[in-house]
Image (cartoon, rainbow, N blue to C red):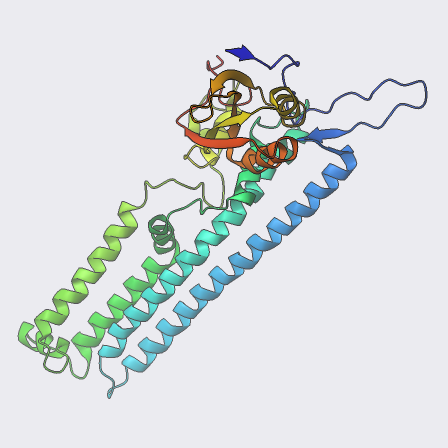
Length: 362
């Protein structure tokens, strides 16, 4: 096995390299990442515009959430008002259960989109803007990778069930209780006050459907709603609209090293970003390796291999990558050696410099 990573270890992409020394005027500081070079002002301006765009996205979907809730409230008020007239049947209230449930499903879907945009906004707030206010500037090591993956491979940070549970507890559970109470009052008082259980069951009947069946189905529906709202309390795939206070991590959470990392760790999605191992079979070992190490700042290890079909010797290059780097390495290899063979293998875990630390820091 031959290691080709003879260059100095790759720099942290959040660090700004010093300007090159020349006899003329010193060059401007340049922010360098994966072969791109930007002045600090250009990069900061781009991030500000991106942040404003994501905030606008989140605001739009926040307004759509409020609109759906408004529809549910207006529909509930209209249904109850009509149902309490002498000539109206209590079926209109039961139909309102169905309408409000449809609005709940719509709002849960919209809430998942809102959480996606909100996640990006909070990621920039906690790992880019906040560290600027606390010198020395030290954002989380993988914040750019996490944000880049969200842009290249967007995924909802919250499940549909958790979204339904949250909207239930914050808005819709109250509507269901109001509708259920109005339905009971309607059965008890209208068209005339009931005196016995038999009269109550008779009022609950709908056509040929007996009152006991109507009561059972309605009660089952309400119990299911309550169980969903309670059972989803402990689902924490997403941090929600507001991050928890430091105190929620314990009395000593605000003191000691790593308290900010605890907040970041709680906020991040619990799933681990995909990590991959690339195998490159090429006859341009040195050229491909140098491009990967110089442009992508990734280490490369070379192995000797023999093609069993042709009997010819080839070089096998191994390099660990994250999911956002795969398009770059494929384009790079295709440019240097169009005849190369690239295999991308999912890795269970990659530990070491540039990935998860091999040993946790105290």
